[in-house]
Length: 203
Image 1: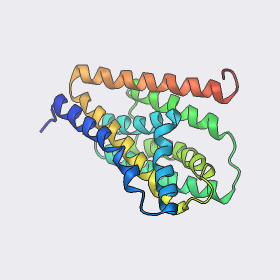
Image 2 (image 1 turned 180 degrees about the horizontal axis):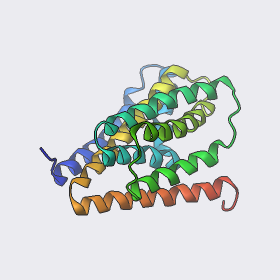
Image 3 (image 1 turned 120 degrees about the horizontal axis):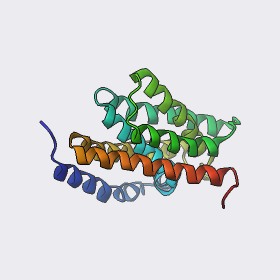
C-alpha cells in the first residue's frame, strides 16, 4: 500500500516538531545534559553534516528494500566508530574536505538516481560516516560525557536519515521523484560550497 504524499508531508512535519524535544529530555544531570544535548545538536547545527545525513535517507529510499534500512543503519554504526577514533586522538587527514565531498557525492548519487549493488552503496556510506563521526569525536566539549555525547549524535543522525526517507517516499509519483532528485542536486551544491570553504577558496 502506497503512502500518499500528504501523509508523508505530515509525517515529516511531525518529525521536525519533535526534534527540539530531545535536548529538553537531556537535562537529567550536568554531564548528561552537556554530552547528550551537545551530541544531539551538533549534526543539526552543522549544514555540511545535516545535508549528507539527509542524503543517506533519500538515497536509501530511492534504492528501496533492503537499502532503505541498511544505509541508515550503516551510517550511524560506522560513524560511532569514527567518533571513537576522534576521541582517541588519532590523526585522520582531510576531514573537512571529505565531509564536504560526502555532500557532493551523496547528492549526485540521488540526483542521478545511481543504483549500485547494495554492498557498494553501504561501503560508500560507511567511508563517509567514518569522517563525520571523527569530526564529532574531535569536537567533544570539555567535561562532556562521551557516551551521552555519542548517543546524542547517533539519535540526531537517525532522525535526519528518517527525514530523508520520508521525503524519499515521494519517488512513488513522477513529480515526487523529480523533487527528490532536485533535493539531491541541492545537497550536492551545498557540499560543493563547503568543499570550496574547506580548501580556503571562499570564506
